[in-house]
Each structure stands twice: as C-alpha cells, then as structure tokens.
Length: 439
Ligand SMILES: Cc1cc2nc3c(=O)[nH]c(=O)nc-3n(C[C@H](O)[C@H](O)[C@H](O)COP(=O)(O)OP(=O)(O)OC[C@H]3O[C@@H](n4cnc5c(N)ncnc54)[C@H](O)[C@@H]3O)c2cc1C
Image (tube, rainbow, N blue to C red; front, side, top):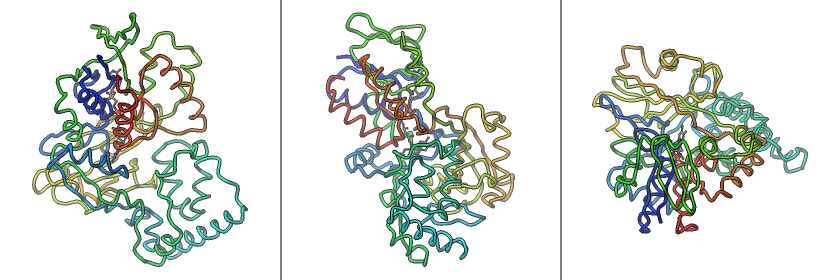
C-alpha cells in the first residue's frame, strides 16, 4: 500500500514514520525546501532560533511524552518553568492568578474580591452560563483578573474580539485555578498552576527541529521537499498528486496541509464549501530572533498583555532552554507578534518591525541599547493559531465531512483546524494509524 502524506511538518513526519514501521511504502510531499513546518529551527552565527515561535516539550499524555523524549535520546535539557507576565513594569508570576500577591495591594484586592464575589454569584445562579469566550473569562475569574490580564492578553494574541470567540475549547488550555490556590496566592503563599507544564524539555542542540529530525531519521529518504501540491485527483483506484511539473500516484492520501490549502487543490469543490472554508479564522505570526552580548533574565518566557509595551504578545529566552543555542558570552531573545492579514502589523516593513521590537525591549530594560545586539532575523508564518470564532463548529463540520467523503484523511493542527500542540499532533497521528492501519 503506497501512502502519500501531504505536508512535512511534525504531524506528516510522525505519520510517515509510524506507517513505515508498519511496512507501508510512504512518501511525504512538502512544499518548502526544508521539512518541519512550524517546528523548524535555524542556526546562524552560533544562534539557534525556532522559526515558528518558542516551542517546549511537555504533555499530560505520558505515552506521547515518553515518545518525544525517547526520540531525542540524550539530546535534551530539562528545565523548570519560570514564566512571567509583564504588568505595569513588573514581572508577575504566571499564571496570573498564582502571582496575585506580587501586584500592588489595590489591584490584588480588586482581583481577589471580584473573584470571590463572582464565585458566590455563579453559585447562586445569578450569572448566566457563558456563551462566548469573553463571558467565560468573567464567569470563571471575575472582573479583576479578567480586566487586568486575561482580556487584554487574549485580545493581543488572537487579534480577534473575545465576544466573537467561542468558549468550547478553553477547558485544559486556560488554567482554571482551585479557589484555595487563588486565595493562597493573594496572601503570598506559594502555589503553582498549569502544573503539567511546570517541567519541560528542550533539545540541547538544533532547536525544536531536532525533535522532528529525530522522528524523521529512519524515513528521511521518503521526504520530498520542494514539492508544492497543486492538484489532487483520482485515476481509477488511485490518487494522483501533482505539483505542476510531475505527478505521483498513491493508494491512500493523508493531508496535514492547512484545510484552506487542501481545498484549493481539490477539483469540483462546491462554492458553499469554499465559503465555509474561507470563514475559518486564523492568525499569522512574525518571529524576531535577537542575539545579544551578555545575559538575559532567568525567565523561560514572558507574556505581554499591554499593547503599549510593544507589538509582541510573548518573549522567550531560548539561551535559557539550552546553552548551545547561543555562542559563549551571549544570550538570545525570541519575540512573537501575532497579526491578521490586512491589519496594521501586516502593513509594516520587516525592518520597521525589528526596529520597533528593539525599542520596546530597551524600554523593558531587556537590552540596554542597540550596542548589545549582535544578531537579528525576522520570519513570518502564515498559519500560526486557529481562532475559534462563533461559527467555527458549523464551518469546520462542513469542511471535514466534504474532505472525508473523498477518502482523504485529515491529521494535524491546520488540517483538522484545531488548537493542537505538538503532543496532540503526535497523539492524533498515533490514533489515526491505529484506526486506519492501511492508511
Ligand atoms: C507560536 C507557537 C508556539 C508553539 N509552541 C508550542 C510549544 O511550546 N509546545 C507544543 O507542543 N506545541 C507548540 N506549538 C504548536 C506546534 O507548532 C504545532 O502543534 C505543530 O508544529 C503542528 O504541526 P503540523 O505538522 O500539524 O502542521 P505544520 O507544522 O503547519 O505543517 C504543515 C506542513 O504543510 C506544508 N504545506 C502547506 N501547503 C503545502 C502544499 N501545498 N504542498 C505541500 N506542503 C504544504 C507546510 O509547509 C508545513 O510544513 C506552537 C505553535 C505556535 C504557532
């Protein structure tokens, strides 16, 4: 059985490895020069940056976590999370509700008072269950934590009004704290939230791409980079996959491409399907990598909710994940800026973005001036985060039904069009292979 896997990101590579271990002939068709998708990394002048934003390895799924760590063998570092939220010039412990005592007293009181008042009102049934993400935030955390952190941060990362986002996805994604922990945090007793991520792994060398490379090692010869799928049709029992220059035949096709890209290459897609697919919302990402002389703070990463602080929603410090990601005597900063096609950030020149980032980092005292900076790069990713808008469930159901009726498997973050982390992608690939042993 010959199985063609469209897309050579983490999901495509994992599928190829698993099917190949079952004795199938596989081919991975990837449009870029390099495989890895969002999990690519680049090393230049001694600095290694993840080009799809900062990636760490963690999971609640013990089988998948063991798989990832086994793949890396000894090429890994373990770290304890030391993550902060940049709030009014201070670095507050993450998650926000676990760092309340680090706020000014008035704000701490506002957060804890509103949290408890809200909790009582919810218990008494005085507040209606939430219908959208905005309402969910107030319903779960109260006005203090919502206004000071959750709403501004979520508006900054999604670039989409929280009132128009669904709340079906938040469970397990946004830490939901036990009441005792919030009270303890307000009076200064140490608590931790989102605990399955408190320890994480990262490749010692090669950045996150090292994980995909390790999975790919036995099947590298099956990966065709530079093959941009532009047509997918049928000839008898077989699929024909073309890139405009050549055609490849396969018995089965599994797509890990963004659904938008897949629908573009399928023949006879009804117009209403194109509309449903066009209405699926996502945002894009700029990553700016900065190499600096000297040191950076000992933080893993920092969330930046306030739009006045900078364009970025998150900054990480890869040289803290592994010393091999920066030359000796140097450190690194990786900046993530989400945007939507056609918005203000999208209209900026890339140099302009880098300049603005450096100015903001200086204002945050993360660099003392341009003389500290020895290296910069910038790269954009079209598909970064799925946005769960209120019509998401209706639109995605139509699209998935249509594709699956054509016998094409859908696995992966933008193929399934779900907020999947690396562990979810591997889990979905493992499940797909178990459920479809012949592709
Ligand atoms: C900012 C950010 C930070 C993240 N941090 C973490 C983290 O810390 N931990 C974690 O577990 N996960 C993290 N993730 C999630 C992780 O990146 C994804 O779960 C994973 O990389 C998705 O892999 P994929 O193969 O499904 O998709 P992709 O990586 O998007 O792969 C799809 C592939 O299809 C290719 N393609 C597209 N069109 C065509 C075509 N026409 N022909 C051929 N090929 C095509 C693309 O080039 C790409 O290689 C993060 C994601 C982002 C955006």
